[in-house]
Length: 562
Image (cartoon, rainbow, N blue to C red; front, side, top):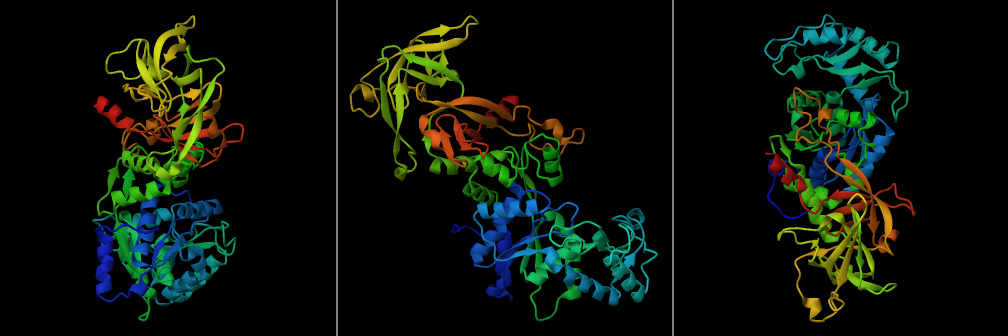
């Protein structure tokens, strides 16, 4: 996968400056370090594309490191899902690493800090420590245990490691400065006691390192040159550097933390806690529900990895956070699917159309182009007969001149077929149209070369043959939330903005060639949008998910509301 040439972003400028002032190009190494406590979402995709994109640009290795230091929330299921998502996006990692691989080394370094008087065991509760922390304008106060002797700290820390204390009895804290203007530097916690089994180390450990202690040291162990984090970690950089000061030796590369802004997506939430709430409370059908902003949800919905990579490249890397409209992602889905998705015909809301002057029992197999954007996609044949299904919205008994679909007395062309004229309708006792009766011009067949086949009419409709089509389940997905920023309201919770129409399940009629479609196959249902075969499909019951409409219908809705 080659990266297109473009101007450098500010992270790349930092790297270029480092290369000019002492970094060797062979020293460059990047990493993507997710915590395996949930599924990756579209926000992670930007970070994945940034780090692996840098690896491609500089021909440098990129590690996939799992920040697995909290056994209460982390599971192997999430590890497997993360690996699957990164691979699906088209990236290969150099080393698969785990913070848990470094538990012994982190412990040994912590012991060294205790021996050097730079860490101590605090036996207070969390509330007392929080009260002593101070405020951004007022200094904190020292713990009464801050001046414990080295020998006592070593003994207590050893007993913590051996599981001799209950959870919450003690923590290990770095001894820095309780009056430091950066509150993160006020004796941060390095270890806490957790009597929980770890998904990789089992019950080998009952003390677990905190993120700030683990992250920079893991970067150092792996010799990561540039540790790229989102902007909320900017205040942590000072602590990141302080911890590195305690362990870095002169003859090794020192990692450098730099930050970039999150790109939040409109009409969704990306907090793992809120996503988990959506799953656990049944608002969606799992982490891979096509309405979810997770990479697995986008994949199931029918999005392509190319679309996500192009989206990440378009929104770029910046120093300030902002909200990116979800329509930008939709645009990239449409743009890529337009190039690669075969065109087929499916009718989602059918009404029967009878061509009264077409011979009964006759059928034709008409040639149809698979994808006009791809000359190599070839063509297929589709059956045509006397009775067809068309979309109910494509017909009106009466309509003004701006309605270019079928109306009584009007003509349209059936895609790849004939010009027809609506003559009459058959209704049920409720006045609902059951059949549209038409006549056709038998000399007007598309591609036949006759003068009539060249005749222009303003409307073209898709259709399926009633005798040959089959029914399939179609799940019409829309945005999960009606509000652009559902989790940023003071007077309402994000669940208050769930879109009640985010999923509609319908039975549609499909052209017969789609019977062979497999889960993951993507198509353009002509005039209706892009759809993907869902994994729930079985040979006798295909299920299609709507990936995205052909046009941005939400933009029109929001303009009307304004």
